[in-house]
Length: 66
Image (cartoon, rainbow, N blue to C red; front, side):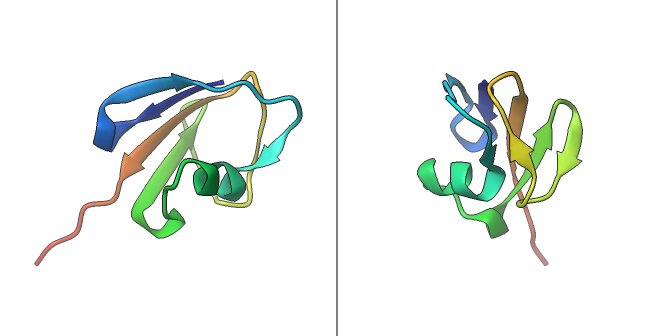
């Protein structure tokens, strides 16, 4: 699986032996669910989505301000 992390401007190649819940993958990457939006294969997905080894993810930082 290819995972692009916007805040670090890097792409990781992660090998998954079996499908996993996105929330668990973010936890392994030390990334807060509340601080990012994730695109899976070009579409925004929720934290309870299942990801597998053939997916492409983009982890985008949420920016807010006032």
